[in-house]
Amino acid sequence: MCVGDAVGGYRVAGLLGRGGFGQVVAARDGAGREVAIKLLHPDLAEDPLVLGRFEREIVLLSELSHPNLPRIHDVGRLADGRPYFVMERLRGETLAEALVRGPIAVATLLDVLGPVCAALDAAHAAGVIHRDLKPSNIFLADRVVLLDFGIAKLLDGTGPQLTRSRHVIGSPVSIAPEQIRGEPVDARTDVYGLAVTAYYALSGRPPFLGDWPLVERQHLEREPPSLVEVAGVPAPVAAVIRRALAKRPEDRPPTPGALWGALALAAGESTARVVRCRLDVVLSVAPESLGDDALDEVDAMLPAALDELTRVGFVVESESQLGAVLVAEDRAEARAAVAELARRLNSATGSGPSRPPFATLSIHLDPQPGSP
Ligand SMILES: Nc1ncnc2c1ncn2[C@@H]1O[C@H](COP(=O)(O)OP(=O)(O)OP(=O)(O)O)[C@@H](O)[C@H]1O
Ligand SMILES: [Mg+2]
Image 1 (cartoon, protein in one colour):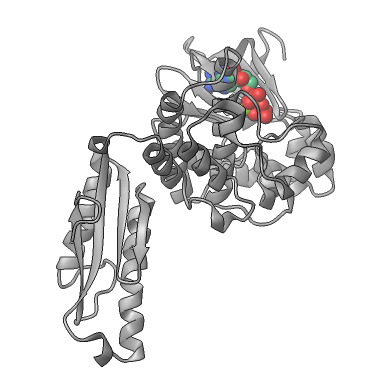
Image 2 (tube, helix red, strand yellow):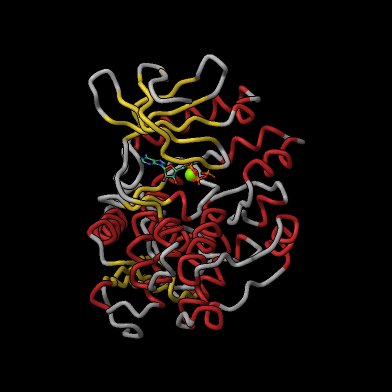
């Protein structure tokens, strides 16, 4: 691709960077507006089904118009089959470039990851997993922008070529154990990628070092060196990142928002920035008088409510059979979600978590920890 070449209706103005999946060029549209075009490696276009799915995902994400995702202007294919997409031209640097100057502080990491986690939660709600979280895919512009959604997925369809493509890619530092095993990925795969990114950002090195087969084995089998020892990270923060690097997805925080919340709590954020929500199942009859079906109904009340609140970034701080305490960053959306849940639970015809006649779910916002 050379200066002056045409890509669709755009004229290439220069190279912005090159990665394992292709290259990014600066370009201008017919009206002279600056854009950036990501041109993917032709090898990634070999399975038309996979490519079609990827293009639909790009469109889906652009329709989310999330402030922490790049604005997408166009999607297309070159005559030689190379897929490309046209996005806004960002000014600034990637987190990878920033890290060349040295590791960052926990507070800075929280500022960077907050928007990234918000974008990921929104994308996950739309059914799209990123799969390739790493410092070079986080762009620090006038806002934080998460790049390259779903591109790693293009490798899924290539079967035996996977290994060959991996060589093209170089070192996929943040690949999760389930990705290595070829198992299904979900939000927790991105939680692992975020944890690798956090580890890297705080210490200046990835959790596992060495050539690819060795790194792969370590992702599957080894605990990373302690961040406390490697970089003097506060132990509670290091513990959260270690948990997010768990080999089994079920042992990790369930969503990026939950990971962010746990990191913020561990970092000792002042309680003013954290909102607590206490949920209690209150029975109007003696538990002994309830049959199995009724007990099942009671048992289902709490998980349904927890599910709703963790989706908007609440983290479960403690949980028992008939109650839970959740915390979140004190954002308007978090408070609104609690208010909305309470409203639906209290309305007789509400469509919220089902409420048997002999039980209510009481919801208190902001109680002191441990208060009745
Ligand atoms: N929208 C954009 N505006 C300006 N520069 C961009 C934009 N998107 C990407 N870049 C630049 O292009 C560089 C190359 O990006 P690319 O995604 O190809 O590489 P990578 O992230 O290092 O590797 P990978 O292919 O594995 O994602 C980035 O590091 C960034 O500096
Ligand atoms: Mg990239």
